[in-house]
Amino acid sequence: MPVQTSQTNMYFPDGCQVLVKASGDSVYTDLGVIEGDATATFNYDEIQVETANAGKTAKKIKNMRVEGGFTLLSLNPDAIKKLGAGVFTTSTTAASPLTTIPNQVIAAGWADNVRHQLVMYTSSSDSTKVRIATKPTLTSVTLDAGGTPETLTENSDYVVMADAGSPSGWSIQFISAGMSTGSPTTKAITIDYGTMTPVASVTMKAGESTKVLAAVEMMYKHTDSAGRIRSIYMPAVEPTSGGFAFNFKGAASDGLESMPITFSARLDTTKTSGAQLFEWTIENGAE
Image (tube, rainbow, N blue to C red; front, side):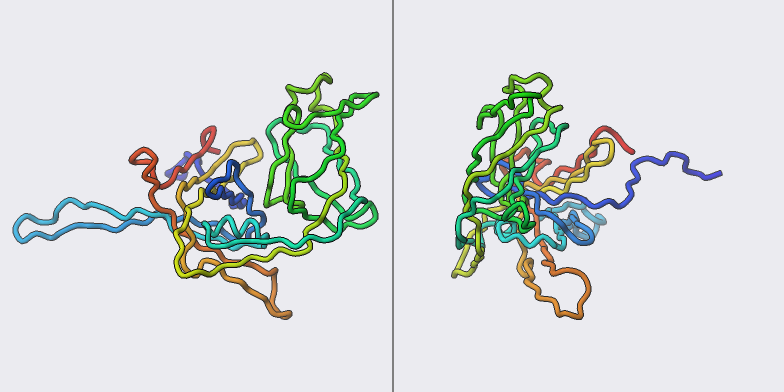
């Protein structure tokens, strides 16, 4: 018989979301697909003195920090810019306006306060996804009310927000409490797009004599099949030197183009002492 019979707090590898909130942002950006592991290691420096006649002093630690990294496969310039803590700037060049973007349907079973990516295609016969720089023009957003659709109102029934992780650069959230149709979450929603001006290209730039970094908030988050969340939150993250590697793989190389990211999380002294570096949370008990 085994000595240890309690098999709790054991987790099978399943990946995680990497979320970042840049200075001035009100919501997190999901950085998208990563390759391999996302690491975050708690480090510190030790201070202990060997005295001449009284042994060793008590051990003290200082310079607490978290050092980590991951490899990014979703090479979205807007998301990488947020990781840069103010180092990068981006600019967009617009393409010709499109009037042929097909409607998007959000299937029944949606939930409040859940982001749905706005996904736009060049036309109903072209699966090329469209990215836009400015807030999208929605001709109408309607709830299938079983007869005459209910027209939904922005900022009452839904909100549109910038989302670097969305193919279009934008997402939508719904607010069922403002809708008059009964059991609205059991109904599909149709989004009718107006004329949109796609982004033809995005240019990211960096380089100046000195720069003060504006630390970002970062979170690794895993949600299991029961909806339980395991996460680590770091309130003050800064990229480390060499932390952005722009790679162009050769044709004989395996895998996808990728960008290794490394960072260091420091103390956020605006928070309560003892909780200034990170928060590791396991929700609803162990598996």
